[in-house]
Length: 213
Image 1 (tube, one colour):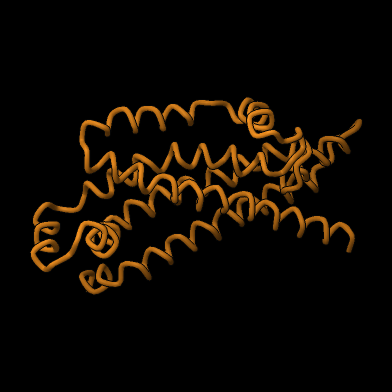
Image 2 (cartoon, helix red, strand yellow):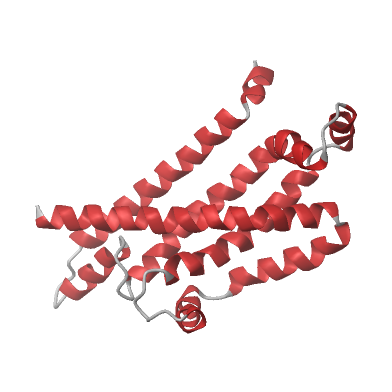
């Protein structure tokens, strides 16, 4: 029972540390993507700079973040901060390209109906761009589930700890149960979160189902 409680704790922490950076990353990426879409000359620098963030190795980021934000080396806050960087890197281009997929005719029609810029963005452009953005969210979410496990190897509570425990117990012979459990739970969590995004996209775009019929 003690191990089960530990496993559930690791699973909850993994869920929390995977989802929070994507939510924050999307909140940051939406205005960045909007600016890149509206002012075309900003698209190359914004997309290039944010894209380069993804090339930073995760271990290096976990080392850099604590001193930058005044955290100790085992502070769990460093994980969502670091993974938010990766989420922004993945989502900014997606948001900009999603908004670019909205035809000029649709925008002009919304304007003719009296929609202001903000109302048009929220009520017309973002809903139409939702499938493209959802595809990016799926990539970011699954990527985060994988990257969070890296933090477990440096002492953070999440499913990655099971890999570390399995490694420590593999002396002298390999001890696979915690490692296999960690892999199974990571895959199950990634599939569940991916399904949640797909469902959310379907609920946000009911007209796509009507057109499909």
